[in-house]
Amino acid sequence: MVASISVVEDLCGESDDSSFVDPVDRAIIVETQGGLPLVSKPYHAVAIKLGLSAEVVMERIRAMQRSGAIRRIGAIPNHFALGYKANGMAVWDVVDEQVDALGHQIGRLDFVSHCYRRPRYLPEWPYNFFVMVHGQSHPEVEKKIEEISHILGADCRANDVLYSTRILKKTGIRLK
Image (tube, rainbow, N blue to C red; front, side):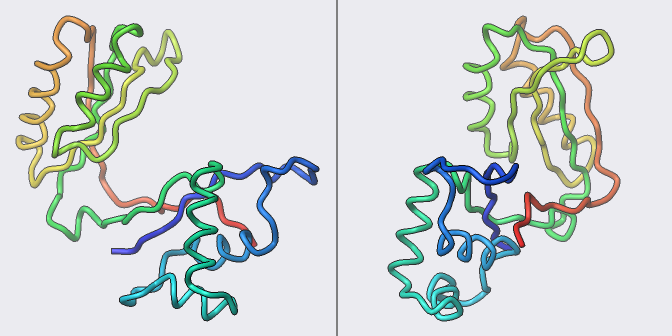
């Protein structure tokens, strides 16, 4: 597994906006955006490489998380290598007024790795709720999707599932 930092930053030119990261924060982002070092103290390793203290690196990362410059830090597993050969993105047409509440409930299921609200693109794409479900087989994924269907109940008008056929590159924005 590789841990990565997903970064949300406006890169559309110069700005006087104080929400932009300073050069030290930018250096931390560049150093960590491809993944944290796979060592027992990754932030210490980043600090050494940048000539900073580990405490400074960790506090700046926390501050960037609070400000929204860094959205999340998390592991990016290779589901296929972990034995999950059936990976289905279930898409749902859920009543707009209920999708947030139901999304919180669905997102807490132990077999759901991603849970998103997205805009519809009518008439071709009526789906506004996306849920990634992993399993060792299509029947296992379908059973889990059926469990989600029961939770959504009458608030779901339609659904479909899109199965992964290969792993795509999983990276966010990259700074240079």
